[in-house]
Amino acid sequence: MTTVGAVTRAALAQRRGPLLRLAGWSFAEALPAALTGLLTARAVDDGFLAGRPGVGLAWLGLLAVAVLVGALGTRQAYGLLGEVVEPFRDDLLRRVVAGTLAGATDGRGDDAAVTRLTHQVEMVRDTWAGLLMVVRGFVFATGAAVVGLCSLAAPVALLVTGPVLAGLLLFAAALPAMVARQREFVLAGERLGRDAVVAVAGHRDVTVSGAGDRVVDWLGGHVDAQARVERRLATMAAARSLSLAVGGWLPVPLLLVAAPWLLRQGLGPGALLGALVYVVRGIQPALHTLFQGVAAGGLRFVVTLDRLLKTCVPPEGSGGATAASPRDPAAPALSLRAVTFRYGPDAVPVLDGFDLVVPAGDHLVIVGASGIGKSTLAGLMAGVLRPGAGTVHVAGTPTATATAAELAAHRVLIPQEAYVFTGTVRDNVRYLRPDLDDADIGRAADRMGLADLVARLGGLDAVLRPAGLSAGERQQVALLRAWLSPAPLVILDEATCHLDPATEARLEAAFATRPGTLVVIAHRISSAARARRVLLLDGGHVHLDTHRGLLARSAAYREMVGYWAGDGVRSSRTAGRSAPLPSGSAPRSSP
Image (cartoon, rainbow, N blue to C red; front, side, top):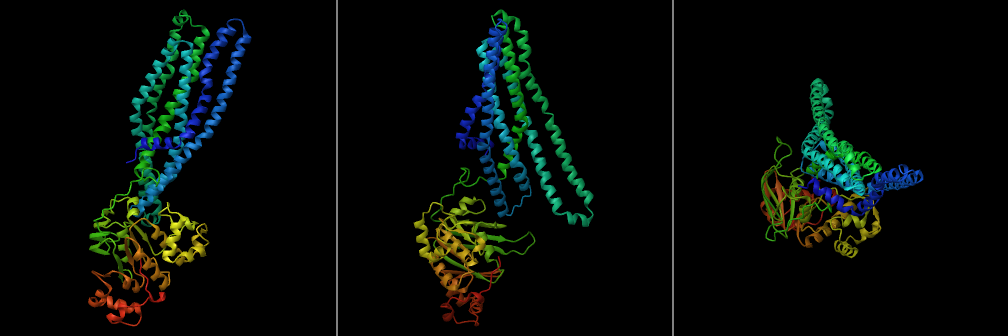
């Protein structure tokens, strides 16, 4: 599990340059805090009390210059803040979207994802920015004030730093309780958002059934619960007030009580006044801002970010993705054991106790009537669908526990509706293998007979727009992408249904010679004739054999071959050498 601390440290490490520039301008911003007390002491002791008002005004003039430098530092610091905060927000958005899509792929709908995306990410972004400025301001302002106190007299610095440290320790001790209260608040808001979506989505049913009052009471209970949690969170203000009283206000009476002794030790009245200025104008506001910022924004940041990280996944290239597990050379390309799958708890199983082993290097074609479950089987093989019972392994890796990166390293699935995005031809075809150069792409296109297609599209630099391509062109782009994929297993789920028979035959022949394993959901019976093995799904029966073997022993397969041929049942000898059929004669398989 990625922790808040690890993600925060990674975000800071990635923005080291802007942070260093931010620190530099923070030194400039802290200049007035470092010089206010010292210049005030000099103006009083060496100027006004010594009867030299010109000298006193000169010291105050230097203070005015320091204030102007500090204002410039503040302006530049806020300008650099966006360079640190916005990339962090973008990373969180990618994580939330990736996690939500992964959950949806696994069949886990999550209405609270809307709350996370629209509310919690923005809350983390805002509190992260505020926390950076608060901590930065406290460190530089307090450090400058302590340096200034030491420049006045060491005893004065000791009188002030003791209570400040005590106040910080009190605040740190109260932080765990503050975090717990803030976590309760975030969870209550998420529950309210999720249940509100459910209520709004079902408002018609609520109205028809007359359950409006009950639903209002139900949601009202969540609102009341959130209000109670927020009130408990507000009680933690007492801990902040106590910490501020000890660290920010206690040094003032201590300095006043110790003033006679300090004056007897040779400390001038101006120096004592300067020490009070450091406390009241430097340390006290810095502590107040720190306690308020951490107790409010800091706690929201930690709790909300922790909640986001538990429900999302790191984007590719963020350093948090799980590396793909090594392939077991002895494991089959695919293994399905006692697999049962149904769409809904009360639905008839599409597959029931299904077993299949596909050895590495196999060329398997799956055929069957429309709606028999061929595409469902392809989804289970690819790990897109999870079985209700049984196990599916790809190259020895169980799909139920494999990450997206692991599955992508082992298999590539091309569905009937090919995916092409707006971008160059190059970006589209090497989407699964971004390290390939143009020469590699050209050789693959030549091998598949798609060089003319690439040229017709305008070359690798041409920008593709999905709406401007035909369905067949989209399929060919996706097939070239699958060929270039590093995955050894290719699953084509009617991926050539929009192509003419000759093009289909050429592409399937190319994939059959590609190193690895090929599984084809057949669009035409000619695909089965070219395969090494054929799997026939026939209701509750499954037949696995060669094309000729099924012709010899399966009446259902012979009937299917005759239907595809369009002229009745053929003899084994004739069907065994069946030619590609016109695309218009092929029935379409439902997903």
